[in-house]
Image (cartoon, rainbow, N blue to C red; front, side, top):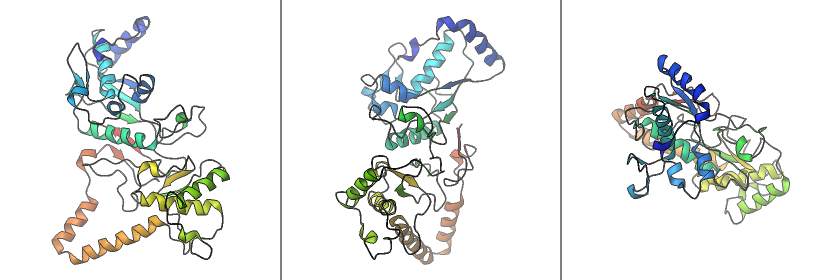
Length: 342
């Protein structure tokens, strides 16, 4: 920063300039992988976290380019404009930027305290909203870059640090690592059951039983989860093992906290899933909530007139024009998600 002083490595200009000329002649974009997360981690004393996560900042706290007097409300826009200025310095002004990778990790080690489900949810959700607003960048408000979110699935075999394996929107078993939500433009998990999520014991890796027992004790104790159903003789006591009891307790706590992203972690032994873990007569707290909500909807629908019922059905089946041609085949956690934001 500032973007206006950005330039390509001069030792590489003999390679970059012909490439840019080719892109210009073929009307093709310059494809870049841009990660505000790494910029923030390397410059935490200079870059506000709020600016990195697209959170609103007062005008006085926005990043100001002293050469252009342009105000930057988020770090990604600054990185995109830095690419435009770099191309301009080589007299190339007709090539657009395509962001082929960007995202935020949902889990990290002790040296990566900002790699959390909450920050990943905030970054990617706000990123989508920002692109759909089609406001461009401060330098090019008329041009909104296309963006690909990195990545679809976590890669559990990646080498350390821990964050390298946790950039995905989904776990390897196709359950969501967190749920993307954007106020004002709907939810991307839009089917009736897709928004119904549960918190259960992590399945991707072997879980240490001592850690799991400690998490269970905390959930049923200080966490104030309702653990009455996993007591001897109750409907969820069987199978009588720590994993089963912990899953029930985790879900009870998760539901009581309004399904907030940080409420399903328990030191890394829990995960969010859209698969109902209920079995036999054991109904998990999330399914109990769904049953109650379904009854309320039925009662409300029956008491409404025909016009209201028609509007209700239309709302459930309509396509949101703002995201048409952007999301393809995003049905719950069982289909492949392509987030290509135009």
